[in-house]
Image (cartoon, rainbow, N blue to C red):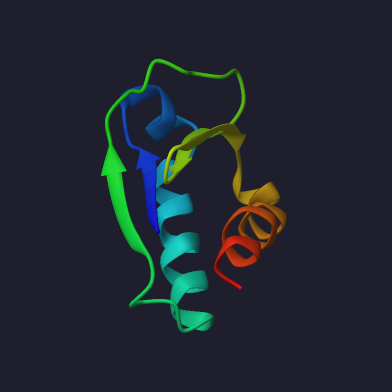
Amino acid sequence: MIIQICVGSSCHIKGSEELVDLFQDAIAKNGLEGEITLAGSFCTGRCNREGVTVAVDDDVFTGVTPEKFEAFFEENILKRIK
């Protein structure tokens, strides 16, 4: 699985750096280092008023925030792997 987090200027201002840290911690906590590649991407042209754009394989999600991270990770990462 490949997870790409937008680190373009708009998403950077909205907290992409914090999301990178949250993803790294969650991947390690769940022992998924060998199953997930975490990467940064530049603007995907899907800027949202709230949150960061995150692509999981071919699916693109907008509006991901640190406050919504746990639910996002459970629903869109863990359920796909298990």
